[in-house]
Length: 328
Length: 266
Image 1 (cartoon, rainbow over the protein chains, first blue to last red):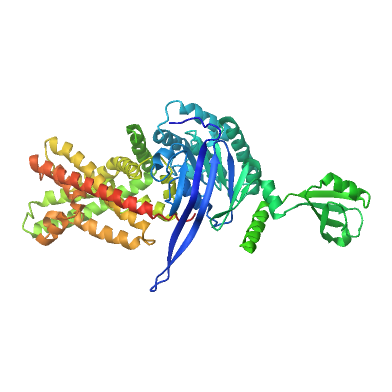
Image 2: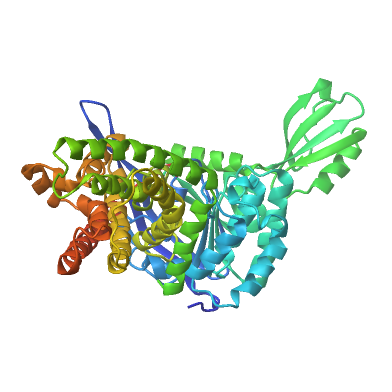
């Protein structure tokens, strides 16, 4: 049963979601320790949204995803995904969602890639119409060349493309990607992102993405949720997060000749100078533009080259964690 | 789950195993060589007992040994199960993200595996047995028909037992101890070493209280025509009861296990 997503429909609705794990350690004297992987988490995703779910290793991202998809039971709290209680209706929900765990495979290791789609079509009860969908995915993800290769012989990039096709074959309403680009080279990542953008444009699939790759976040999501120690540390858009933690874009100026530190340029804050002022790094303060700064620089020193560094989101998240911990 | 899905999963089990033909060949050679040794020992034991032992003459004893060797792979008497690895590695999360009943899906895959291995792993020991010692097999068709039903049930009982034991991986990090204990117990009590009918009374009683004789002794008794008619149906009935009981136990333990599931490795 597949229904077309209607705008504003809740795809994920989680309230007070909590998951504890009991960790046993030690030899003779066994100690039990309760680790709170996810603590009192609220999360809402509406149909058609693309949400980046980010946080450090161990922040609780994967545990959350497993609770949303019915793989793990919450210790406390409630969650509904695509209108289902994931634990009670795991199988019905599985027909509505596609999941890719970047570090695990859902393909049949020993068999040609093509076989995995045949089995998945059968277990998802897809009619003959699925061939059209499969052809579309083969074309878009460029799978044709290795459809008859056993999965164990595929390169990582090929396998991940195969995994994405497997997750999308049944045209799910929600696509969950857990670190999909991990280990891929720059070109493969870029092609995968282009595919996902086009796929979402064509089918309106809701996307929940966990990643450490900030280019993924920038290219693929329109909203981010940052988790820290199991709780939401930030929810909003990326520029908002950058503003909140005060991470600035950085202009790196390479000048023709040694120049005294440009400490008083309006709209900037001097970060560092190198080589007697031949290279100077300036933080671009909110509200000012690179063009205005350049015009100002031109009057003071001859410019040879410049680069603009976007804030690194990994760094932004780190700063967010730091402010959170300082504050609470 | 639809019948079509179950059929495709079964077929996939077949295909996965047929991808490794040299492994099947190596297994067949091993089973056959050990069959020669076991047939010789069994015939020696029958001879030492004065020509018959618990209803087995020399050729019947050898036939028992050859049939047991032929069924090792299809019934999967020795441990080989993905499930423990999947629970340990956390890949079980992938199984849980599919719209299938995991036990039924794994059972289908195992039936496909058994169906593939039946001829390549079963025929060589029987052919060599027929040439070297001769086989004492019934002349009618019925024991073979009922025998096939019994073999399928043996595969199901074996699967159900391994599924149940594998689920211990939800609680134990290290499964080697449990697997070894299971292997030792099941291999002896299923009749792999000597027929269950040769066991002393107390040991036969222990065996009868376990599903293990249903994995090997039962199909061999039916195929060899040692039990016929209503008795044969009784043996098959016992197999059905064990299959249903152990599968059900496996479902209950699965539910408990997934409730406390810790998916390893994020």
